[in-house]
Amino acid sequence: MYIKKHISILFLILATSIASAQVKFEAKVSKKKLGVNERLRIDFEMNQDGDNFEPPSFADFDVVGGPNTSVSNYSRNGHRSYNKTYSYFLAPKKRGKFTIKQAKIEIDGETYKTFPITIEVTKAVSKPNGNTAASDVASENIHLVAEVSNASPYLNEAITVVYKLYVSPDIGVSSNWREKEIPRFNDFWSQNIEIKGLNVLTGEYKGKEYRYVVLRKTVLYPQKSGRLKIEPLVMDITAEVPSNKRDIFGRALMTKVPKEVTAGSRVINVKPLPEDGKPSDFKGAVGNFSFEVTTSKTELNAAESLQAKIEVKGKGNLKLFELPKLTVPSSLEVYEPEHKENVRTNLNGMQGGIADTYTIVPQYKGKYPIPSISFSYFDPEKETYNRISSDEIIIDVITGPTAANGTTENASANTKQTVQANSNTFSFIKTTSNWEYKTTTPFFKSTTFWSLTLVPFLAIPLAIFIRRKRDERHADVQGNRIRKADRLAKKYLSEAKKAMGQKEAFYLALEKALHNYLKSKLNIETSDFNKEKIEDLLTERMVERSVVEDFISILEHCELARYTPITQVTMQNDYDKAAKTISLIDKQLK
Image 1 (cartoon, rainbow, N blue to C red):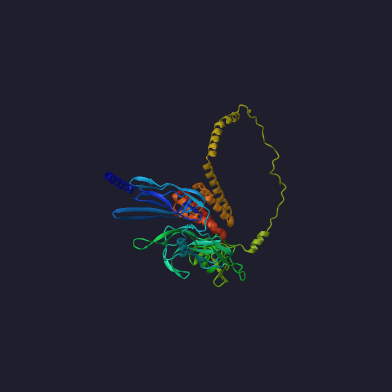
Image 2 (cartoon, rainbow, N blue to C red):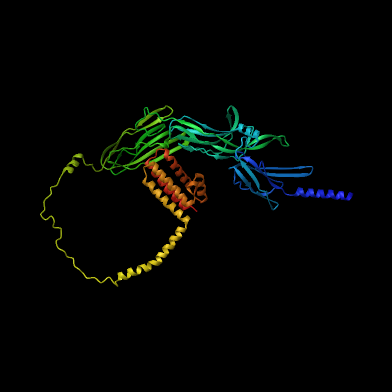
């Protein structure tokens, strides 16, 4: 009996040792039933360190946090304990029953898998996640704010929107945050200001000290008056909230809480420009500007050329209005202007200058005036219209042919030549025929007869060959789709050229041409288009970064052009740029 007791103890010790040496790799979830507005935490735990961890796909969930890795390794009474955990926070996409498949890991050369877990997602619940305390603490201490410089601007007056994330010193935020919804600026001309690095700053929010980071800076120019809505920025973050538990050093253990934060939508009340005192030559310029008209020379010979520059400098909506046109006497030949922009955009709006440079070639000797040109703009700070007029410029053509005067022209115009009657008026008509009838060989058995007889027989193999090629072409569904898209791209590009000068029709045709070109080259449908996907696909196909950026900028300009004044020169430049960019992409695609 005594021996049996000792044997039993020995077996118990051996069994315990074997169990402790076994590898454990399992998946644990915070709950198996949750509301569609709740978050699910899933932990993949192991008792030995491993390599090549592969999580499941989470196809029916959005990953809003993770993977977060935690490791505990300690010894107690000679017994070593090790635990490593990969944690994810998931947001269900819809209601229903879903299976989270197996995760894999390699430990000591062996592959281990977790068991699949079935999760039931129900309708939204009133108190998500049940962890009310930690969630409430995160809500009270994290704020995403959209700071608008001016909520009541004039039409085409610059405003800025700065997005800041405020976090209380009492909690933390994991680095795996992501933008869930990007703000849209409908009815605004917009430009993002580049932010180099997310610097943590200190400041006040509602009278309390906070840490904050600036996430986005955007300059906006409203393109219509009235109440305009700015869509919100929405982010998924993981807050680290102190819990009541302590580690061995007495520090509070942090509870990770997935959180969705939003800056909320903002409404901008855009005031129309006043009608009282509006100049007749006002073209939509809003800001504070200077204006001048200059020429490269004032004395030259006929058939030589000079340049006349119309230039506006200052601060305001420089890219969003047309410059006044140059008017000259008809004896001066004037070519289409070259438009140049030297504009930089920062939080104060657009600053710099724009210019139209005309090439002028005089035809005759003489003195020709370039009349005074006026430019009007609205100053939103003083709330008044201003007009600037240039001085008249005299062009002196020193040598060259002299233009015919009015007397000479009238004399030559009124000079008539007397018509002399001729009795032999119809002498050129022949009254005799020199046609002869010639006999020809009979058609039957002639060379032409045999040729026409044999042609149908020779055409049969050719018809069979053409028929096979046509069948192959019809069967090539993908190729037909690409060829159709190519034809459409050429069609719309030609339509854009025909619509030059008609802003909406031109940019609609140009945008369609670009889309159909991408359909043919990247094999994606129009419904799948977004700038990020286009950029990724072109980059994957080894297209140079500068060419990709040019293509995206053309698409963006097509969207913005519907709300901004566009000149004929700008349309021509956009057309040429689109044709050049498509050609470069064709050469670089792999």
